Image (cartoon, rainbow, N blue to C red; front, side):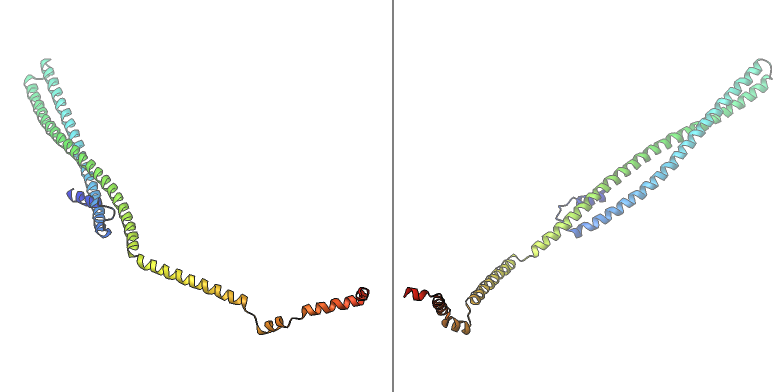
Amino acid sequence: MNIFKRLFKIGQAEANASIDNMEDPIKMTEQGIRDMKEDLSKSVEALAQVKAMAIRSKNERDEHLAKAKDYETKAIAILKKAHNRDLDASEADRLAKEALTKKEEAQKHADRSGQDTEKFDKNVSQLQTTIQGIKDNISNWENELTTLKARVKVSSATKNVNKQMAALDSTGTVSMLERMKEKVAQEEALAEAYGDIASNKTSIDEEIDAAADTSEQKADDELAKLKEQLGLDKDKA
């Protein structure tokens, strides 16, 4: 009993208790429950045997009481016959005495069987109390074990999360993020610079064509030619 109380005190530790230290109590408790179930089975078997003996002794008591009553009835019948002169008086006394002796023996057996019955009944009561106690303890321990297993799972999950969090290098992570930001900013600036270069870049041929552009002069010549064809220049003159 005491060892299981100590085991369940261990099971009531805080959720962040070491999982390694909690595995053994769980295994020991499971084994303890199995042992108690075996004890329960043996106790139930013993109870059945004691009950059988109690029933048998009670039946024997009732049987001997019936015999004692029967011998007494016969002794009375014999004496009545002698009184009615249906049986010799001396023979009647002898037979009645024998019947009463048998009655006394049967009564002694009945008393002894009655004492045995009382003793067996007490044993049955004690065994029933013990069995009920074992059942209650098994039920309580199974509930405690279920709770303990659940707490172990929570403890294990919490431990793993905390372990992962503790393993993170916050300083190194922030430094890495800053370097990434700097690199991204640099890449963005470089991309913008290339864009400016691309939009402003002109070839030598383009520069020459721009400098030698005679499109406006050609337009003036075409206009003068058209006016000449229409005779507009002559009218004006």
